[in-house]
Image (tube, rainbow, N blue to C red; front, side, top):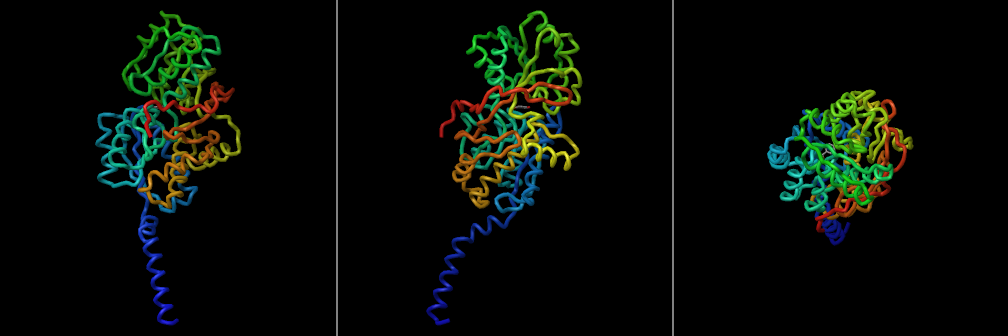
Length: 390
Ligand code: PHB
């Protein structure tokens, strides 16, 4: 090589190194994923299913997302909003994670979203429906793989009105998820001419339902709409039947009431109608493959939480591939995710500008140990994203 050529070759090598240097460093270091989920308490099973789903997706990708090997850091948030800010800071400040994934409980998720905003950390919410997360707290670094609380409530409001119910009592836990599910339900049900005659609630995670069930019996509504989930949902469905209400006053809910709970609820759940973005009998090639892989890996049947965890992985995979593993590129991450169709076991869905899934809500009925899909409650339902300014 002539000296001039050598010089040119060296110069172009230097340019290459400059262009790829920081990126190469990004993609060769591990991607630290901070998992903040409930592993104890009424939502423990939900947290475990989410982690299982996420790990399944990551292992299908050879343990990598966006070209980077994934390393998990875990915190049990106990579904306790009072500990949430400290817990999320363990991941962000102590462990210095690149990405946060969490959580189940809406109150905890709002604290996570605030910290994610302040520290500009990428956050994928694999369950908690808090409307604020994709409302006033929305941002390019926050995306949800699940639903907003408004969505299943709204879908069920339309269904119950169509079924001809006029006077309804609602019953739920007094916190964002319960309040917002009921609000979504009311919006659709009252628009269609129905009337909510009484709103009943108890503090989360209490399960002393007796006095409230007595009040339902005395009020004699046409039907009841409810939001409960996890271990609390198991107890509520059993207590509702034991109080003799099931045969006289039909019980409806957002689908969490009967998801991941049917083994424990047994015959007391039989026949219940719920609305949710997943069901047990979709029988699509995509869902069948997912269910088989999940069952083989964990010796368990998946539920909606497992799907949401799996899809949190898919969303991360799509966004991180677009930025080649560089988590600092929030706007490019968000743009890629919003352009994508997520090939979910629930059916393909897209992500709105506010970061929430736009998706079908199925009408399901409990038949044996399955939430059988019997129709579509609301097609392509988008959260109104009230208060989201982008
Ligand atoms: C919530 O707190 O947002 C929440 C918890 C459990 C569910 C659904 C929503 O199943």
